[in-house]
Image 1: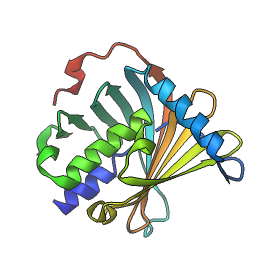
Image 2: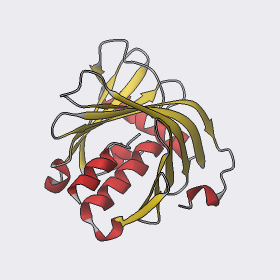
Image 3: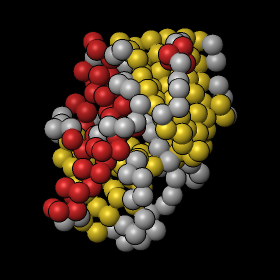
Image 4: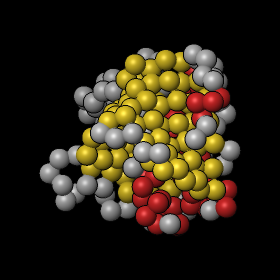
Length: 211
């Protein structure tokens, strides 16, 4: 089970750009305005389709492990990561279950019956929608750079802390959507996912989320 949880941590989330300027903490007024802007945009998003590139950093490797594919999100909680390179692999979050297709070998995990899986499922969906900073299970801090806004979330739950040290969501200042998700594990290894060619509110058939 622990190995599967660590595997899931490798598939977390989103879009492009580096932090180009020195970060500063937001003021209370800036935080309020930022939250309002994100919530306003998120309330209008029904679907997201985007290409992604994932970078898995392991301390003992000199180069990050890179993979890529396409991500599909549909309100309220349907999410699919379809890996194309360097292998065919998909992971679907649907109705409290995690559905995995590894080169035709299919498996499922009931997140509803496992506390950690349930929290990870909620975390992933919340990260994609950009609503994670409203979650009471995290201590949230807000920062800004020249081009982006950044939120850092520290889990309060002791069980979740064993796997997740910090989540960092980067938002584009222009459209107020999540452009990158960085998940730092307790070992300080991390997963960073960058999305490109994002399309909002295009029709996505429910069959996309079948395993």
